[in-house]
Image (cartoon, rainbow, N blue to C red; front, side, top):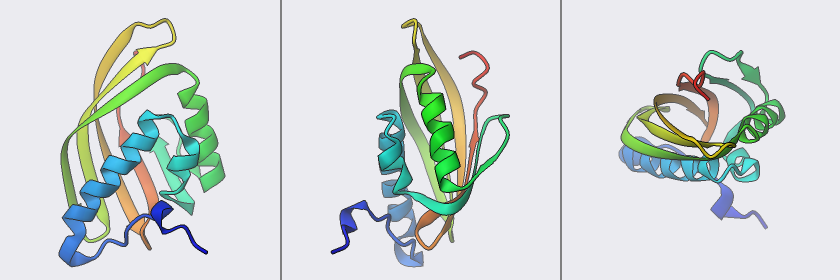
Amino acid sequence: MTNLACKTPLLLPENIQENAESLITKLYAAVDEKSTSRLGAFLADDLRFQLGNFDAVTGKSAVLEANENFFQIIDSMTHRIDGIWAQNEDIICKGEVHYKRLDQSELSLPFATILKMKSGLIQDYQVYVDVTPL
């Protein structure tokens, strides 16, 4: 039996904004928990991911490994979402991410994310943020 609770919603024209808001809320909850297992439920097997000016990573397992490596260099993070826009299968969000470093010092940075969806999963995941201060 398939566990439908772990599936992301298919983005249909009549409810695309509502689905986009739900997806972004759930996606960033998984990221803030530093849970690669929960994050993986949103990702297509052949996705492309790029964080800031790091090289792009392709493939679900490579993307999850890159995220796990990033999660290990910080103590915690919390995203505040200030806006979400959706059109067809494209979703954009912006906000602020608050990091707690391993030395317990803190830093907040603005970010924006562009997602391209395919069959209800993230096919392209581009995060615009300058994490150099971390």
